[in-house]
Structures are given as structure tokens and as C-alpha cells.
Amino acid sequence: MKIDKEEFLVALKKNKDFSFQIDQPCINGTRFFEMVLHYHALLRKIQEPTSFCDPDKKTDKISGAQIIKYLNNYTKCTRTGDKYVRWLFNSLLLLYIDKFGWDKIDEPVRKIFLWTYRIRLKNPRVFWDFTVQKEATEGILLKTLRDVIAPEHFVNCRCPIFEKENESNEQKSKRENQLKDRDKLSSINLNSLDLVAFYGLVRDGI
Image (cartoon, rainbow, N blue to C red; front, top):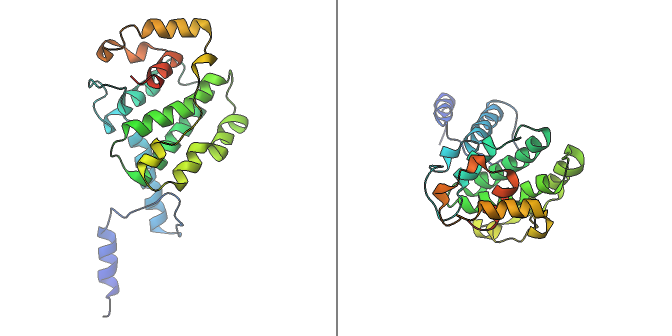
């Protein structure tokens, strides 16, 4: 069967939902630019809390939307080190969604948050070369995400997080005071919590 060139080009032009995979080889030309625009749009989408669900909706655990909302607004989120860690968070989340989609996204977001932001909490200063880039190339979550074939394999993988014993007494006391009303998530103003307290909330399963 002979394929008409003009018909083929028209059909190709109409196909705006071409399927991309971020680690696929991509030849020069129109598809390259479409791929760049596709992932640029996806990156913008994962930085919007409403892309996940209603960030103000009452949930048993802190949702992915609430985590994104917090990361967009917490105090000192614009510091250079915090921006580096957010870049790592965004990259892993983008890779996950690119591979597995948006279904049951809250747990992956919580896991990626705990793993990446432990870097911010454990280091007085965050450098690109010695911390973030090393985590990006050698970190267990990136390797796991590349190798797993099902979402539950990623969610259930073991990875180091910021342990409670690493908190100072002052940080621990402050977090415990903010957790007194932990059974009523709607009463907690997430934007008023500092990063240590919010990390504790997510880690402790709220």
C-alpha cells in the first residue's frame, strides 16, 4: 500500500498528543521542539498544587497538593540552596509522572519530598556540586525510579530520611508543640510552619 506523502504530513501535524519519554533518543527537527514544549508544560503543571487535587481539601495524610503548596510559599524558599533542592524534587517528580502518570500520586510525592528535603535539613549550606548534583547522580531514588516497572516498587523502596534523633531539642520541642492538634489537619496552617516542622508532619504520617 502506497502512502501519500501529503496525507501523511497532514496526519502527523494533527497528532499533537505524540507520546514522549524523557530518556528517549530524539532526532532534530519538529519533534525535538515539541518534546521540549511537552516537558516544559509538564514541569509547570507539577508546580501547581491544583494539578494534584484541592490543596485545602481535608485528608487523613498531608496530600501531594499540600506539599506543593507549602514548597511554593514557605519562608526562605527563595534561598539558593532551597532552590537547588526544589530543582531535585521537581526533577524526580517529573520523572515519576512521566513514567507512571498521575494515579495515586500523593504517596510518591511524600516519598520524594522526604528524600530530597532531608538534604536541606541536614546541611547548613547546600552546594550544587557537593550535595545536589551528587544526590542527583548517585541517589537511590533516581536509580530506583529508572529501574522499577511498577509504581508500588518505587513507593516501597527503602531510602534514608532525616531521622528524629538529628533534630535539636529546640526543633523537636517546636515540632511537638505544633503536632498537639495533629488529628485535625484542617486546623494546621501549613504556610505558617517552618521546614523542620512540616518535614516532621509528613514523616510522621499525617
